[in-house]
Image (tube, rainbow, N blue to C red; front, side):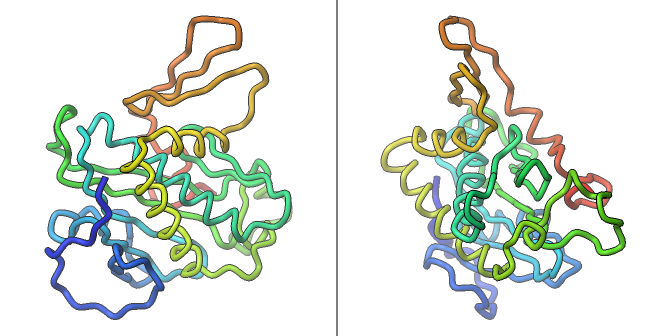
Length: 253
């Protein structure tokens, strides 16, 4: 799974983020959509392109990857991105903060929805061949809308509301990029197992249940002492992105 910056991107830009050298920044105005834009430029810009949107209410970004694995296995990059996002948030989280994922990619803090991740690939990509690119995108809510009455958004969370008073969107994106590079290096050098453990450790714990991720990214759960495993398929779960309002393209509220 390559993160090396591609020589195909020749458009000059002004650096705003402190990113590792393998990344290249593309900054959008507030009205932009990082996930959509990254897909539009992925073929030309190549691996390591990181698109982000300067907004006060959301942290919104997407990164282009160039996998070497067949698409069916490469989709596990979703877990690498989610692990990196959780690691970045954990650095800045208040003590004993409860952070976890609802399978596959809804990010929860203290039982409130705060964001999520998503993955895209070319429409003509074949399951058993490496896709030309993947795009991992994420959104994290910075603030809950002020026009809601107290208690109306108990099922939702925000960085501000959970005590992340000093974190800026740029800081989180920078931290994410460093953690993603670490996870991708681990995957390339030692396989996927450590990424799987990192992600699985942030699913809601279930007593006497063992969980694993198979080669296609499906979640397997097995009750201790029983041979049969239940499977939750990664597809079409990531295409539905249940944490997102598909009319607005933003986090549910």
